[in-house]
Length: 336
Ligand code: CDP
Image 1 (cartoon, protein in one colour):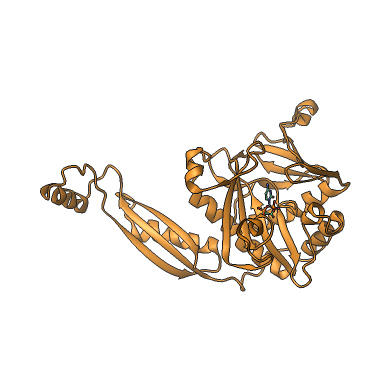
Image 2 (image 1 turned 60 degrees about the horizontal axis):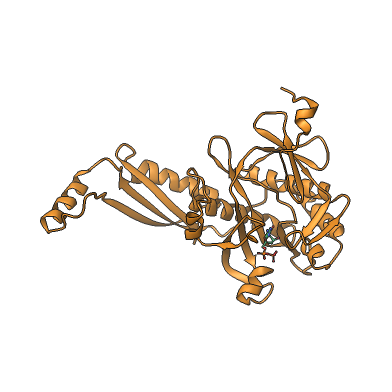
């Protein structure tokens, strides 16, 4: 069904660099990327003709790459104009999820790392998306205290999604001789409660450096007047367009650690739980009212990607280690 022109041009939301309007399908939105560059929470601002188109094109390539790798994103396709994309409508979670592979920006200031040094493992940090509060950093407990996550979402799933994205990007950018130093993601839930990547995947939210020369290919060009923004973003787009398709994943580190926990279902008192509960009562611990016996398995495994490792862990947890009729399982997965 086509929207009437008035309805389709109605602005649903407008930020510093994007405008959202209704899409032609009820669950979709049209996202227009503006020709605006902003930094330092809006203190520095400049109109840069063509920037919106560059960001839309770079985002489309990177979203498409993730979609091809089975990572859930909001990206549906390109829009009617060069600076427009079509997204699945998501209920966004007010979190900024920052992944860091190399030390740049605020982490250098806060922890005095040497600029450009490689971290032992990718780091993840969370910030509260709130211009009024100045986007403060969050701990897991503060995320809980502020009730930032809706009931259907959990932080482990968000971390896993962010690390999966990083793994695809690290590998892909290596192939075009770009250092993917750090980036910020935002996530949301679709109408069925599925966690997905939203926002944009443009050099506004990344730090990209030429792997050999250190040439800047991201918003630092504008932030610190290091180079011409248009030239820098165009160079990145040239490299992306020159290397289409799914990246070769053969160079990935392929070892993963997983812990799978199996427990009897909440209202099922299995014989083992019953025996232990009775024993505790006999030993004078009448205060223990409920007990769920369980087991935990620690696994080290190899897989071609984090997504593949997650698939294996789910099958092992659900089909082999637990009895789905009477037990629940949960898992934590990370790079070894
Ligand atoms: O970039 P800045 O030094 O202000 O902050 P950072 O914490 O070092 O940023 C890490 C990465 O997240 C960089 O690639 C930033 O471009 C991105 N970021 C963002 O896109 N939006 C924010 N509000 C904060 C960081």
